[in-house]
Length: 266
Image (cartoon, rainbow, N blue to C red):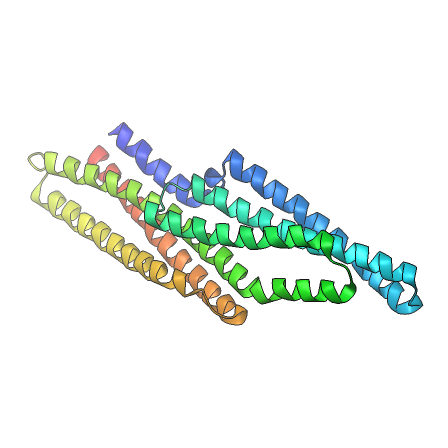
């Protein structure tokens, strides 16, 4: 019985303490992304100063300085985008709740984006003019919608994977609870047994509600493949579904705790 209580506590703690999800590899990857993004912001500020000076003085020196700065900016923008993709890939690797076939899908879409961004990094040093820079930058802009879609789909898949992992742990504990109740039938009064059976039914219904939400979320994730504004709307909607599904699991874990107390003290 004490082991059962410990498992219930772990399920509740994992659902209410997000830091339990953090692992060293993704921490390092996220820190690298933060560094690369800070570098990007610095490159952007440097370019904005340089292009302002070029427009003001219209000299060969200021033009060259603006060209040098925009080349660094274009390369760093792709480097920061790549660092974020690598961070998401680490989150996929750490996630225990994503099925292998789905894991392969999300790794592929991230790999495609990394390949595109690598091309930008490699191309930047060969840019010969500000007009060339504008054309290269336009390629990034044209791909931004696909990149945003890839990243957001992966984020949603990671979140769903964690929820499904905790749901599986919950299912394992619920099976043990059912076994304990079955074992106690001969010792329980009919009234108490009726209460426990009713609680188990409530628990089962709550799990069905969670599974319906999880299935809905899974079907929505591939649809985050549209224009950025629509992606924003869908992503916001998904966050609401995630919150509701998470609440179902938290309430289910609470019900399990009540069952454990009923078996232990009555």
